[in-house]
Image (cartoon, rainbow, N blue to C red; front, side, top):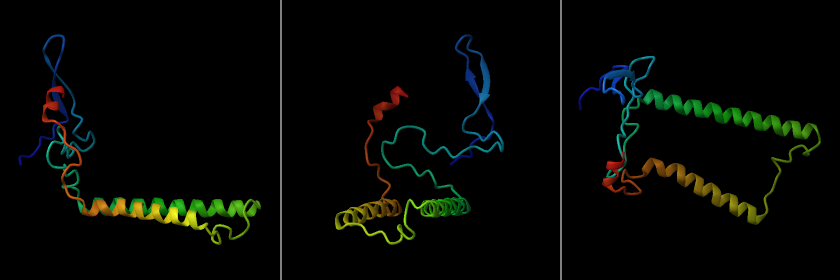
Length: 142
């Protein structure tokens, strides 16, 4: 695979006089000048594209750490909200911790959790075949 150019500008044909002018290349980072990994250049007609094949592991770990921090922040805000509701006597102390679902609600929540977990974990094991097929003739419309 050849190295992609890192030029920040690409030639553009002018509609009015067919002269070539330069415009910013949307696939080049304007700050670093490095070319973005644009794996998808057309419709998916055969194999699912691998958007993350060049993602450094440090970036993946950084994303996980950032998401973990966001989850912690949500937990903190939820705890603060519960404390405010309790302090204003909207909820009795311990109402959330002591809450007991009815059997129907518990069954629905268990099904929701199972579906959510399956959806998240399925991404780790899914094959790379596309889930739909696009007629290759769509290229003529691009």
